[in-house]
Image (cartoon, rainbow, N blue to C red; front, side):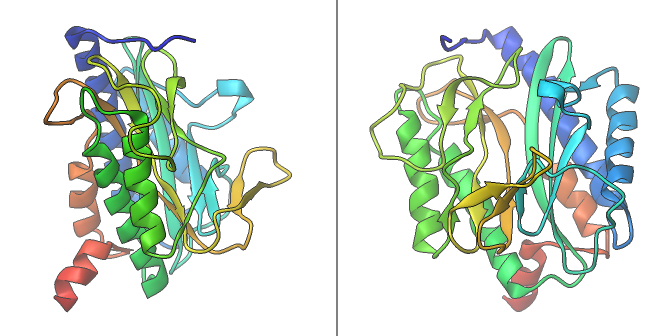
Length: 274
């Protein structure tokens, strides 16, 4: 499959979908609390997305039966919504895709529920930083390996494991397009980043070893050592030699976190300490 380059108009349409993902995650952030089930969160996301004239991209994708992927603690990605209730101290990663006007936006965020351990907060902080270090390399003339290396080097410098089996990807009319965007690699290697490429950059970083396994449900990916994992994701357009263009947004999500006493954000803890 060749890389599909997007026009400015098409990138604007992807941005509309990407921002709706952020709005959906922000809505969920305002409702997240101990005792709420992941299935209820999934239903709320579906209702919100459809009320905005869009459809959840994940529903039906390769037979997937839910609108969101909600992964808790040692679950890396592709966690299935269920009647399981989130608990105080959980690290909950929510990944959502939205299709509107035929174009897809894809983004993910990891949330700390209640009193979260220092181990989890540090993992969330480093994974978050990995995302933005990778995005800083999303420039015309760079290569995918520049993004991959930036993520891997910072994660491993902090003693964490970088998942190899799952990668970021191109995004557009299809959820998964070329090129693949691994979270590990070598600077200067990999596909050349060209104007009009749109990619989802999504570090999946483990507190322990990098190895993962799949549960018997055929979807949920968990850490092999059962230590926690974090996941942040932005949809990004390659449009400039000096400045990346992030199409999704965390602004509303982090505003909702700040107003929800049931959540703990690593930024708030750092500010309190600092």
